[in-house]
Image (cartoon, rainbow, N blue to C red; front, side, top):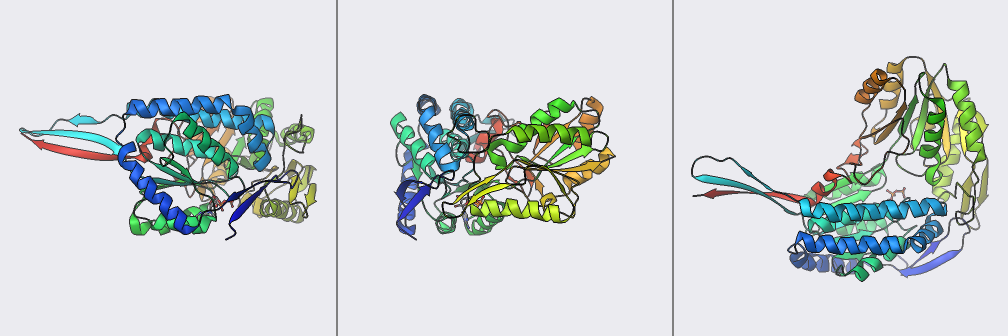
Length: 461
Ligand code: ADP
């Protein structure tokens, strides 16, 4: 492994910064420091942890412009979206600063001559591994509940976007959070992942990324029986029923599909549209998609930035080619700006019609700005298609009919449902998936649970 990791801007190919990578030995030392720091941090009062988190939150909000610029530089997303990410990410810190004070236990009626007391305590040092698509918010929504619960925390950010992690850590230290309570380590995912999973001192792994890597982490954590939170892949269906408000459906589909150039695990991946409205929906959606400006996210008016790297680009292109070869029609987009020398890849927002289930795009997460439209005539057929995947993260549907809406929502096997809403993520709500999309929830009152152990004491009188 090279000693330095150079981070490149995916919109320009320019090197942003080179930073040192940690060796396995250095990661071991970080774990030891985390273990030591846990002894005192876990015993601080909830009020103390809450005020440090609150200060961290305030510093992030104060520095939102520079944090957003850094996100745009290393990830590529448009600047205004990056500002949104910073505020969304900071919201988790504010939320869990407040939740720290509500880690309640309980007393339980016991047999005569006994008392039963249930208390909660921090699980121990936590290791986090995060992806590049939200370089800032994927860290805060793990670090904030961990620290609030009294855990110490080591983060290994994605190789493509480690600079936001450092920037967040610097502000945490400025807020007064001890350096060994929140640490950043940089390097190869598999190598550092193995150090984390094999260490008995790490009591919990929290991961956001692909399902195959999540499975490796789960397998490798078996020997030390760690707590696990897994935020894995998605393959979100978006159903537009015959009685949907079409303008609303188009607007929300645009927001869900093309945000972050389609590179989020909750982006609508399959548009399942009632046959009676499919032409009108497809026309309106294509018109809106064609208006999006693709380019460098730091430039004014850009709506869609580059895709993160060649691997991501190749997957998107192969899905489009496969669909077209099998009979899909390109309504808009389907063009690329590819510069292998610089490592810059842009995909024009694409809408595909006449899609069917023989095409790869209906089975694999795209992680790109491509909207494939399939049609249905009967709502049970749409629900069956929506659930026909090992994933169960986010699903969306559009209907103005409340009976249909309740029926659809109760039959979708998904952890997050957007009914007439393409943007359901919120700090106060439990984010997470069913099936192979993950284990555990982030945000909401549920979000602190995975960082807590339960201790039950039976007192004999
Ligand atoms: P993507 O393909 O979208 O980059 P990954 O799941 O490969 O998604 O990456 C998400 C995070 O997982 C990154 O921080 C990456 O370094 C890390 N990672 C990749 N492979 C492994 C592995 N074998 N063990 C632990 N972490 C890994």
